[in-house]
Length: 370
Image (cartoon, rainbow, N blue to C red):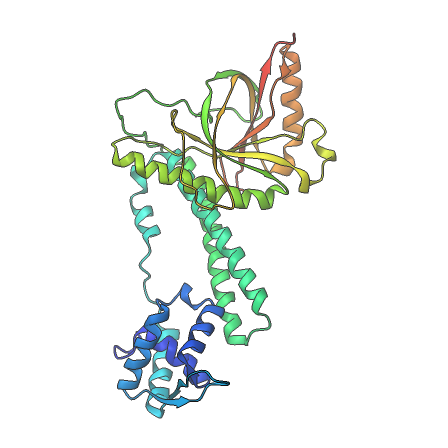
């Protein structure tokens, strides 16, 4: 363990002063540039408090140094021999001793058995999407500051490696959750909301069914779905879970369902560049919802009513790149039934991208030709 006389915050600042003497504002800049707030609890004002503690303990000294120009002098802090020894001992202790981490996610896993399967997989999907966003943010910070000293680069490398490992674990775990014994949501006294995702479908066997209209939280995008989906899902899940928690306070249970998307490039979509693909990403909401919390002003979430009625659908197992034969099979089935497509291409995503067993429902509204 890190010696009791040295806190994590003190070790973080002491280490920056071991590199070179610094004043408080310079320490703040380095902490921000290196992304140190990801793993230290250091606010701007607390930097000066910690510097004071280190000075009182005789681990650093401070000297007023005139600023360039007409600015006020700055207190530049330098590590003392005692401070260097304390830093060395604490650093070696930190490198050699794994410490349990207090994480709310582990509490969620501990209580998972009481959560309905669809709701649990949706929450885990939101977590995986948040990890993807954090990965992109760290990678962008790393690129913006390159070249970095090797030890500073290691901080980003370690953080990104942990995110990748956790993302891989979560995506595999989502598949496991979907195969475990399902948990039924508690009876709230009302009629159950019909889901856009059927509980049981045989893979690759098209079917005709009837669905009611649904209230949807929607983000509309144009662009490569790998990029637009990464922006849409955090906004959608942020809105859905804010609504879920608000309804829970009113004694209303709302199970977040799997996400879906409608695609609007028509039958000639193969000829359309991915950068021009237009989509409406969505999450079903309780009927009567008129507004939701906006997680990101740059990615607005709107409320829409999606009509269904008669639909033809099929469960696809495999990657998105392997969907085309399944889609063609569904088109042929629709024609065999004497029907025609009456709406956009829709997909319901029952598993995460890259999951070992990807499951996607492909769906179209259908009608009798006039």
